[in-house]
Structures are given as C-alpha cells and as structure tokens.
Amino acid sequence: MRSHPAFAAPSRANEADHLVNRSSHSLRGVDSADGTKTIKLPQGEVAVRDSGSGEPLLFVHGLLVDGRLWRKVVPRLDGDFRCLAPDLPLGSHRTPMRTDADLSPAGLARLLVDLVEALGLERVTLVGNDTGGAISQIVAANHAERVERLVLTPCDAFDNFLPPAFRPLQYAARVPGLLTAALQGMRLAPLRRLPIAFGWLIKHDPDDWLLGEWVKPFLSDAAIRRDSVKVLKGISPRYTNEAAERLRSFERPTLLAWAREDRFFKASLAERLAQTIPGAWLEWIEDSYTFVSEDQPALLAELIKGFVAST
Image 1 (cartoon, helix red, strand yellow):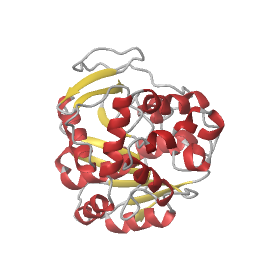
Image 2 (image 1 turned 60 degrees about the vertical axis):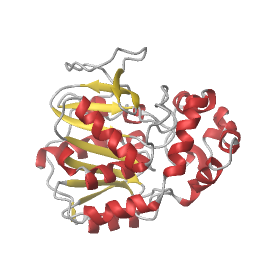
Image 3 (image 1 turned 90 degrees about the vertical axis):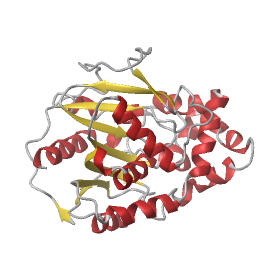
Image 4 (image 1 turned 90 degrees about the horizontal axis):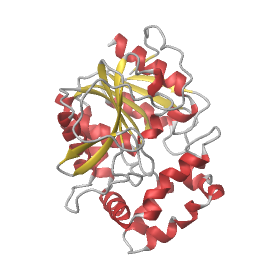
C-alpha cells in the first residue's frame, strides 16, 4: 500500500454542477431527451452520458442511482478526458433490460465489458462507487485486459456485499411484492433523507429533485422493478471475495479514494483492499460520506486527474 503519491497539477476549476455533453464521438443509438446516448447491448439498451475527449474514464454507479451521481465530477475532468457515465440497470435506469439478461454481479461486469467494446474502446480507467465499486472489482479481476487503471471510492468489498444495513432489501426481493411495498415511502422527500435511504450516503445538502428522480423508475415501472429484484437476488459476497483473491495479482495501477467518515464502507475496508491489491494508493477524503462525488467533487476530480497523470 502506498499513500499520498506525488500527483500532478490539480484539475481546472469548473463549478458546473451538470454534465456538459461535448462529445466528439459517434455512438450507436439516438439522443434521448436529457442528452444521453443509447447503446444497444446483448442485455438491452443502456443510456450513456459521453463528454469530452482523450483517455477514457468510465464511471460506475451503484444501486438506486444513475450516471448523474458523477454530475459534479465529470465537468471538472472532461476538458482532459473522455468521460463516460452510463445508467446501469441497478434500479434507477429508465429502459428495462431484456427479460433474459444476466443481472448477477458477474453478468453486470460482463455488461460493462460489452459496453466498452460497443464504444470501440480497448481499455478504460474504471471509477466505481458503492455497488458499482464491487462490479468494477469483478471487471478488474476477470477482464483485466479491458482495465487501464482502477479507481475505487467507498464501495462493497469482501464480505460486505451488501452492507448489513441494506441486506433487508435482498430479503424483501425474495418475497413477491414486498420490495415494492418497502420502498413506497421513498415517494416522500423527508423519508428519502433517512439514514436507511440516502441520509448516510450524502453528507451535505442532497438535492431532493435528484433523489426523487433516482427512485422514480423503480416506483413507476414494473419492468424496472423486475430488473432490480434480479440484481438484488444475485448479490452475494462470494463474488467480491473471489474478485479479491484474483486482485492479489492485479497489475494495473489502483487508487482508493475513500471517505474516512463512511458509515457503510468503513475505513478498515479500504485499508484491507489496499493491502490486497498490489501497489494500491490509498487517499482519504474528509468531510464526506459514501457519495464522495456529491460531497467532495473537486477533491475527487483532482485525485483522479493526478492519479492518471502519474501512472
């Protein structure tokens, strides 16, 4: 484990809070109402926000959020990199997957690899958070040829997949209709801010409109609920433990940019990952919970830019 590497100059100042789609790349599919592109994959259609040009960074979100999780980070990076922020089928996506799509952790990792291939890319720097960090570890472990670098912000790992506080969602997913009933309270803004919802994921002033957007697809579309149930039923620590064993021989540069105050993904988890992945750099992010892209976007962007430049 290496800490505090000599990073390059910090990223440019940019206070925009939303992605600016300046992509010069041509993607398969059509523009959607909010400026995303639609990519057709074997598993179904995936919306991708694609901005900037240069070395590609692929941002991977977790359960019940979408690619807008990175909306404050991407504008600080897409002057130097091609930034790709897909809406993965994790409960906040707006287009259901094919009914036969494999949405197990391994299947979701395969979906990311298929997305990289569909975009015409050889390798990407993966930036993962929450459930997306677990998926990124599985990609790095099983499809290392597609990974240039790995950046993990607070996320599932080892036996912590899912964290104990969110395992009731898995239990509910096994009983028809129970998960839908359990999440009905998320229609109300005050309940979305509870610790068992988004309250302990975002420390500083979460945007109620965005939290509402994140839960709307699950609450309004039975096919999205079907996908979400498949994802939750498939989650198991065996995937992250198997990935961790493979990552002991992972040869690509790795950065762990971790929130010291995280309630669900403790500092000890980051330290264990840093000891597992050869040469991993561990950087602490203060004054943040799990969603460091919301709480500390400028610092996270600076760390990513410096990490890429120095490796």
